[in-house]
Image (tube, helix red, strand yellow):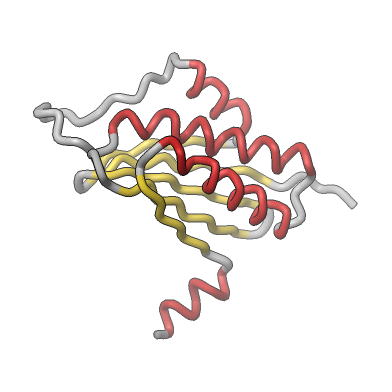
Length: 137
């Protein structure tokens, strides 16, 4: 129980929805709500909503049918970190999925966040986005 309590105190929020484009709007809405709660500017909130949308656009084509799209939102100081992940469909390859880093979605994602990392482990594909709150009054 203490682990759950420390996560709540640290401000970590996790959400799971079906891995279907129809549910991406739910992740965008949660992103905007949490960013507003963290006192980000309207432009920063819009940037994060769009970034989450683009992350989902990159991940969903690799998702196993009837699986979940998961998002985790955490903060450390002025930095908001969002991790979006899907369970991978078995495509029969040994190398795993390759995200198209030349795509429009990747370009937008990297332009709107301070950092983006992608990882493929344990049958899941992960994108982790980081956005730093600007200093404003």
